[in-house]
Amino acid sequence: MTTHLAERQAVIDGCLAMNRLGINQGMSGNLSHRVEGGFLVTPTSMPYDAMTPDDIVEMGLDGTYLGNRRPSSEWRIHRDILRARPDVTVVLHAHPTFATALAVHGRGIPSFHYMVALAGGDSIRCAPYATFGTQELSDHALTALEGRLACLLANHGMIVLGTSVQSALSLAVEVETLARQYLYAQQLGEPVILPPDEIARVAEKMRRMKYGQPVDDSDAPEDTARPRS
Ligand code: 13P
Image (tube, rainbow, N blue to C red; front, top):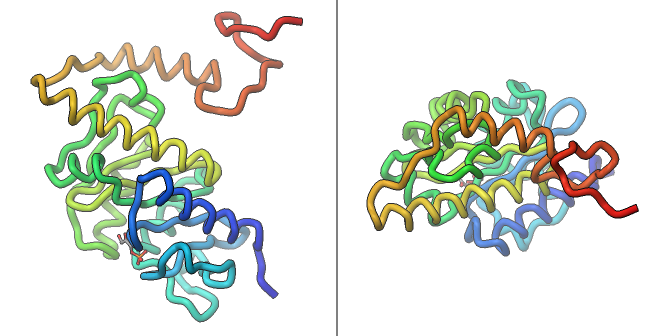
C-alpha cells in the first residue's frame, strides 16, 4: 500500500508547477516534503510529467530509503535542511534562468528591493560552489540558509524553503523575479541598496500583516484595510 498519498501527489504537482511557472526546466531540480519519520523526495533523473505517486521516494533522516527508485542526487540537501530546520516542511531546488545567471558569478541578491525581506533577511546569499550531490554542497547550502528561506548555489541554481509546496513555489517565483529585476537594474549601474534598518522595518510589517500568506482578517493590524461590515 502506498503511504502518504496526498503528500506524494503534492510533490508531483509542485514539480509540474515549477516547470509550468518557468522556474525550472527539463529534469533539473528536485522537491521534498516532510512526513512522519522522514521525508518524501523526487527520484533522480526522472521527467516530472512521467512521475506517479509510487515513484516518489520515501527516506528516513538517516539516509535510508524505501522502494525501487533511487532518490534525488541532492537527497543530502533535503535531509540536512529538514533535520536542522523544524520550521520547514518543503524544500525546493531549481535552476531558474535569472537566479542561476547571478549564481554563476557567485552573486547573491542584496536588498535593492524591499521584497528581498520575504526570504527572511536583508539579502539572499549565494552558497559557494561544490559538486552536485555532495555533502560539501549540502553544508554550504545549510550555512547560506541560516535565518533565511532562500539561497542561491554558485554555478548551479537556487533553494527555497516553505511550510507547504504552495508557499515554496510562490517564494521561488518571487526570488526568480527579484533576480531578473536585479539583473535588469544593473544595466544602469549599481542600484540603490536599502539599509538594514529599513529591511528590518519591512520584515516586521510583513510579519504583522502576514504578508504573502492567505488572508485572515480576524486579526488584521490597524494599518491594514478592513472588509466593510
Ligand atoms: P536529480 O535528478 O538527481 O534530482 O538532480 C537534479 C539536480 O538538479 C541536481 O542538482
